[in-house]
Image (cartoon, rainbow, N blue to C red):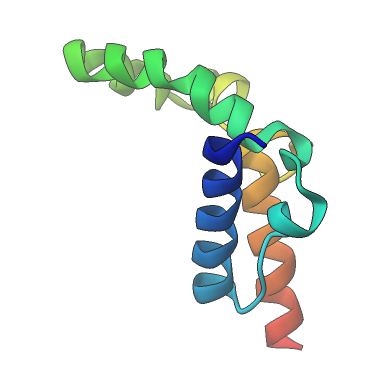
Length: 95
């Protein structure tokens, strides 16, 4: 058993349950749903670069570049997929 993965799944499910009223489902599936954790680990070096070179973030925020590199609620993996999940939950609660 990979305890580090289990701890990550538990943490993400608790956070999403508290924040959105239902867990994301990592523990129930016992896997990295749609590569969310994998994308998170791969993003760490990018955030390190932003810490060293803050002007990079300003460049990524430019409208033409932002749509190419920033996550979107339409993504099927990673942070964008979580954004879509939150959007769907928000719409459910509104109606």
